[in-house]
Length: 242
Ligand code: ATP
Image 1 (cartoon, helix red, strand yellow):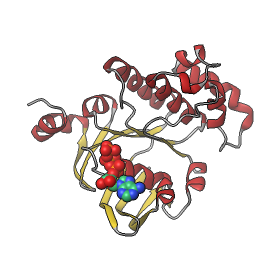
Image 2: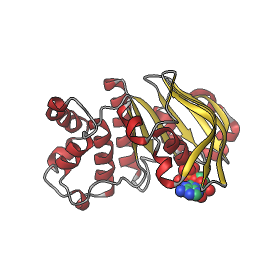
Image 3: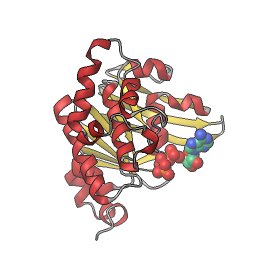
């Protein structure tokens, strides 16, 4: 279980972005974190993965725990070894490396080097397209293929918790559906706990078990997917239906 308790985050010592955020991501579940631009969703993921520190951000109050063990005082390198991996928004693959070398690079934090080959095959099982493109330089992939590769690298790190930042960003609707279907499959087959940040509430709620909606650095609503989907405000503001 990943727990955030009253987390406050400040950038550059003065810019308060998370204002007492509390949420839980139970083991083996998919949780969606929704909200409009600038609500603080990416900051929440970076607070969990420790990547905040490289942007002059810090958790100034509250705490974050993984399985009852505090992690917000650890560096990003320690947090990744504890099994939390963040797939960044905008994909961030190594453009000059081939697809397969990107996958191998994704495993660099692991100790069990001998299983790497088998896990590459696992990535190809989820994303057959990546196998066809395995010798292609990643910089030449389409946006959707790069998104697949970014998630594939996440699988190579063998995380117990995968943090996904806007996997739908910039992708055509059909591809969004395909990628979310694969995210669900990874959760079911690997048992990976997934926290997915999305502006596309509809698609995120189609695979999630539970959802949080945040605005202005705080959770404003939470609940099971059924509860959120039947809420009038959620329907109007986040799903665009009334
Ligand atoms: P989006 O969907 O647009 O990515 P978001 O909900 O993910 O939005 P964040 O990226 O977490 O929101 O940003 C929340 C606020 O924090 C914004 O006002 C942003 O300007 C500010 N912010 C983000 N990163 C930094 C940083 N490195 N330094 C200072 N302020 C930052």
